[in-house]
Image (cartoon, rainbow, N blue to C red; front, side, top):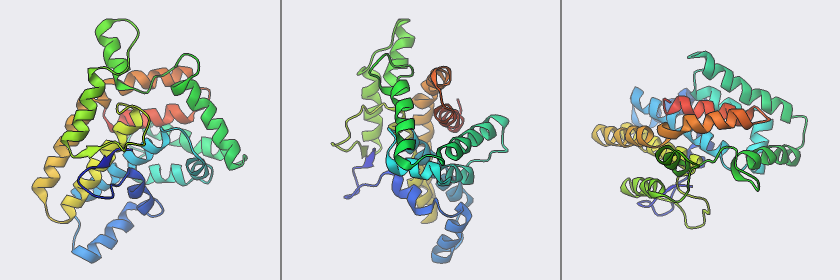
Length: 257
């Protein structure tokens, strides 16, 4: 996943999620208050956004056994429900309910069966080997809009995403084999920016926090917000399970599509 280049060991969104997804955001904030005084409300908002973006990034990568175990036992849906207000809109509430409903159905399967079920769906939509029903890459949609024909990969739009990561001090690990404009990586980048923003608020660096928020807002506006809606429509029309359409609806809500 996307990682910091300025921190020796790096940190993917999973570290943020795993640290807090078993407890309410308020509990994590209470612990930080005990260590460093009152936590600004802006820090709590940024921390919640970091967790939400990170969970969605995790769900929109190729499914592994760890994800499927969390989906089956309800902890994945629970993590999303703790940081997203299902009552804010009917659309958000329906999407959260669809994630939980899939997990309840998957609970009757063992972890490997659940993983295979999700992987078949993931491959149908995002990988192949046949025609991709919903290509998960920004460059596909950006080039499609310019040409009026089928989209292309490995375009200048992909390079622009990579530059955005580098300009903010982040990079993709060498071992990651997918493209930098994959939907999960764009969400992961936003998760890391929001986590850094929360940390800046918590140590009293308001200027640094606002700068990180500006980077995140600009990236969301000029990258995922430009294409997540079209990808979500393709996912909805091609999916046989409700899990991925629900994740895409939640992602669209977060980037304000």
